[in-house]
Length: 548
Image (cartoon, rainbow, N blue to C red; front, side, top):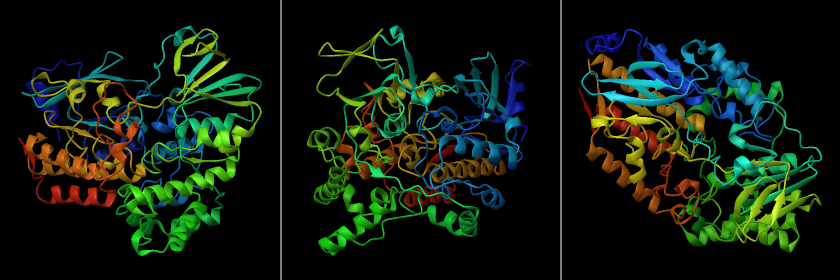
């Protein structure tokens, strides 16, 4: 391209400032693919990553029991069929170490590492309106410039780790699941506390319970859970998946959630009670997220349907828990199945039958503070611990970007803008911030409700094609109009407000972060629908976006 360097020279940029066509923040699933696509087009690109290596989520989240709940055959890249076939997953839902190895395999096969600065965190980014360049500062004192700034920071990458007063006073070990140490943490015989029982907390609890001396689970909100069925994959099994490469790739682009399965069981009202139960039993036995994302779409809209499905899952949980006291504490009743993130688990409920496992009800008596000995609850009890694990979640969707000082037109601050209202244009750009592209950002399916490799690759492809189109037409700047963004936000909200999800309190709604504006973070109109709308915008010549 060369335009960025020419613009930097014209703007009188410091000779020590390195200039690129594009800067990509993050070396996870999206960041690796974005660098690959831009390099493929001949753009000069610099990736910046806070970690010491590639992997994103799968670098940081190395806590005990971490594994994904997308099947190995769909949690994939689709730009290299041979790469797909040559990798051999060990099971349907591989654990974190294997997934991290896979992303390193991708980075090495595509020779992507050389484009990244590792152990480097972006602290600020400012748009120069005259030069039409982004200036990016890092915590290592470096300053870089680029025509385009592309955020691949991840939707769950801003951990809530300073959540209780007094944490620094704790005499034992304290670890947030998203910043887990690489060194082995020894649990045998230790008094361990886990705060948080979402998908991550559940994985930790079921994994360490057999090892610890005593485990206290600080429980506030119980979860509906589905038992994971995780068979091993032989080379012959994977060869069969490899033969389906194109079929899988094309299928997942158009389903509701970017998984291979979809809502294809007919309308709830058209089935008899026995037929409905047969569908639910079949999907329950599958041991996947299909019960949530491919049973009956009416579950998200119709309270009576949701009530029936919720009761089906509750009964399955009662059969395993047996103890009425445990049932009361561990089975949700205040919200419906599917309106929160649904975890897969492996013998999680059975953990609570162990004599060394104890529930601390922090809804009845909240955590007051952390003291040197452990956790103090509002009733004055001090729960003495050797290790405290915080599975306290993230400032999802928006947090990774608001922790960077991003300044757009007129010096406007993205952090300040999003503190008033979280808005984007299709989760791809934000009005007032020209040439800033986003993946995994609010108001797109990739913010939460999607098999992430499906949605992130779709966004990267759209961004890359947009930038290529700009180059071909000699355009240097792109920004969504306010009217376009208003229309997308209105459509997003109208779609969301038809569902039961917006009636709940969860991280999907930003409810876990004090003061965060309330809005469903993820577009819930479906992955296939979103892709179609994005394609329509591109085919129209990017109607709704302004160029210079």
